Length: 215
Image (cartoon, rainbow, N blue to C red; front, side):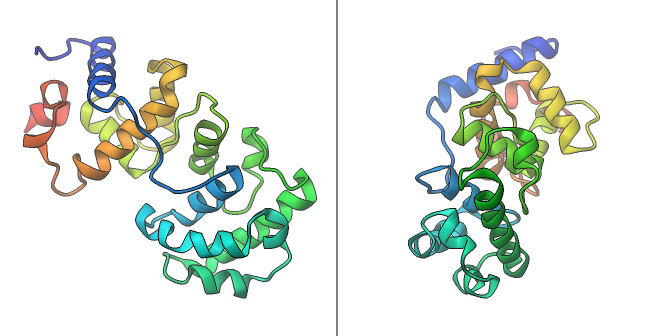
């Protein structure tokens, strides 16, 4: 297959390859509702989904909804999440998040970006994950994997920040594919396009990858 000649061709080739080779993708976090997803995503910051999935069953059993979590203290939350990264700050975030959900949003996770960003522990990436995964909105969450893979493939140019990467991806990926494309790029970065030792010889996108071409 020939290399893509321009940005439009590159995006078309990349999206077509993912559509063919990863037709069904979803978050690797285990959750049953928006509240559980929000908790899991907050816990997943600088931590593996596998580790998060190990602690959330007991956490959700004890705190099945925002109300129950809002009625405890940080120390009890911490006792359930000690094995994740930065447990103390995450316990504080979960405690504050649960209280705000109860006090300001009637115990429901809000859908609007501006409301999500008010919640403790929620930045733009987490808010976009919630909008795309929990509420099926056209949103692109940019984590380290998405940032790296987008740059290596050449989907983004001279991007220095996740916000700029998000802007470029949103401008070039059809709105209806944004949430799916997030998972494509994330999983590709997690298992193939590794940070230190990308598996270029195993990668089906080498035919159109700027990083591979330079190598």
